[in-house]
Amino acid sequence: MKIQQFPGSLVKKPFFSILLALIILYLDYITGPEIQFPFLFIAPVILITCYNDLWWGLSLSVLLPIVSVYFIFLWNENQRFIFIIINLVIRIIIFAFIAVLINVVKKQKRELSERINNLERFLPICSFCKKIRDEKNHWHNIENYISGKTSTEFSHSICPDCAKKYYKDYIK
Image 1 (cartoon, helix red, strand yellow):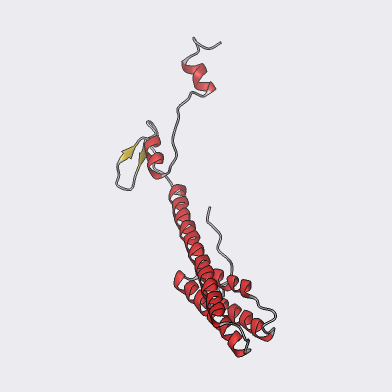
Image 2: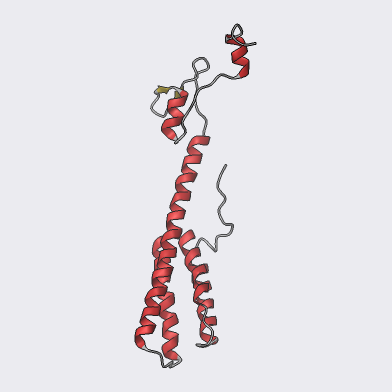
């Protein structure tokens, strides 16, 4: 089972995320200081981090709040400079944190996909003793092989058919 990727090549390029960020910045600018859209900046940060790499996500995480705060200076708002800087730092920290979280999830997804692909391939198994051959041509007990590749633990029991076959004298 392959994990599906988002269709379309536009999303995999930073162009789409940057275009989305510019559109949101434009909306932020034309609405003036009364209405701001800082929460919308999360979408391009998430997209660019998901489909590119962390560097792009962190870059947008810094640039978007800086441009947004620059708009406040363009509107000549009489706000205290310290509050504007605190707002800027908080936005940068939040967006960068989101980019780092998305990158961690992306890394975990890639590792999980590799693990799934590793477990889904054909396993050479002995027809008689059921041992599995690894990449180095060493033979392993099936329980040891699977336990070594995954976090699966085995407990042994006897199925009803084998119980009847091997312990028919002890079972009613």
